[in-house]
Image (cartoon, rainbow, N blue to C red):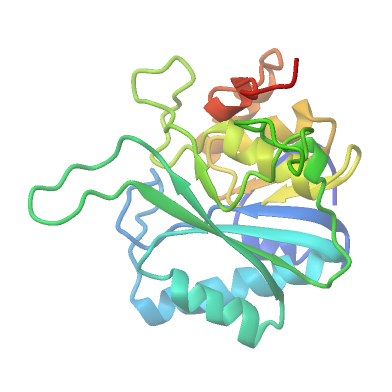
Length: 257
């Protein structure tokens, strides 16, 4: 297992070569099985085949995850309830959160409600896990004696904009995630020098953010074009980040004089 590098190939087979209990944090954004075109693959399987694929990659991911490690998995609404049951009931992981990423723009509908969110499941292997609350606190809106004026827990509903198609940071990838979403996960659930793995690295966001935050990293993708895209992004000067939580800029009201 080499650190600070991208692997091109099948994530399941590549993870099989990694040692047990080696990874501190896994941030996974697997295909949602919604028919998206990923260049050399189309994300469309029979649901039984998709569940088998999910169990196979999770088997390897959980094996390589340290006992004090953390797993975040992005997932679409059609499979997330089943994924929750697989992680908790079948793999015995400890549920720690169901995060809703709310964005302000998305696909429009005229008969039914327009989708405006994605979900992330947050699980750990044990009760001994990293959570750096002080690194992700949100400034308080008001001053109150009972409030922790170092900032509040950001909660499990996160509001970050998409990386807009007209943005200079936008890559030719159908499911690029904002860097600030990964920033919060990596700051909260790992420490400098820890190893962060993304088994479906796509446009390279996870690895870029991990590097910029002083973590070691590994990225895997089956598409060589996406590996080349990720390597190009890593060659750029570190810039944090292409999006942010607007609450980070606020100053508490009613501060004592």
